[in-house]
Length: 195
Length: 174
Image 1 (tube, rainbow over the protein chains, first blue to last red):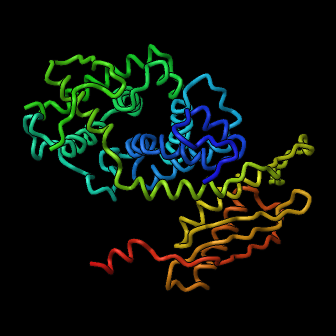
Image 2: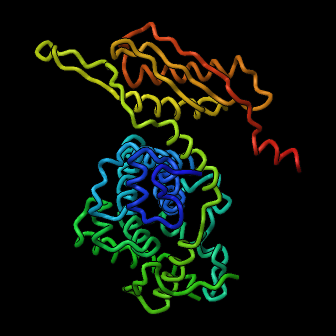
Image 3: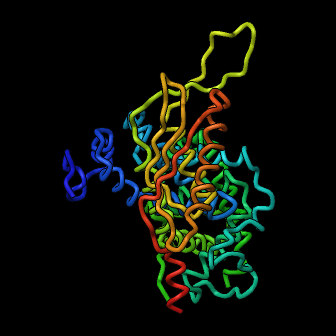
């Protein structure tokens, strides 16, 4: 693999990868995909009605990022920029096809789909990570989109509240409120897992 | 069983409106989710890579149908060829088992005259049926994106490769 600007050799900074990609280095862009794709896809799976929709929005987001590299101004992190693009694709998709019952529309080709929160709850110290993720997914699906989005972006992806505000087009105060309500709702929904 | 720490990836202590047990549980859940990779990510990554590779950043602007208004006859609607390429790639992938490899949009003075769609076909597929699915999806997408600016568009389908469906192979192995 030889890059014109050598950006993907070693552990280049995201900004360097963007610069290289802007110059036409597709490998640099593919490195960005490898770094941030799993997180964006994880978020998309929990923000759309099924895996196919999640794949569509993630594909659209990265194609949009590729075409819009010139629009990245460096004022936010690359990850924040990518999440913001993804959020707009999700919103567009929701406008085209509003979700119906979000709980009934868990990814239908995911082996972890449609678990029951109450099927085998127990003290969470003895609960496996996979079981916890399944229970969390069920609970997250019951949250309104903004609460769910704020909780995932802050607690799972480690974005700051101002970064989340930029991603979702909200004020930091609104993010704080949505996050508070999301945490409270999740705590209630997962109460039976506390043992 | 994988131990999961009770801190968030960003190192932020979870502020919890509920009791400590709920706070610990949510923090552990967040960590578990952060470490979780979707089982369909690998497949998705390939698809995204394919779409990005198809999406050249060069641009040819294509004439598209603008709703006619007598007072706005001079207005024009133009669409980048890359928008059309991406839309066709998604449509072809949804409408058939073909994998789009490369799509070229043909134009004459900015008016789309058709496209050449290069695909990989699954091993054993009826190529005539596959080609028709690809052609129909491509033509429908051109019309959807550009409107009926030119009804004489031509779509050529090129089967450049044959691929073996991974799910099919896995099924055979069992």
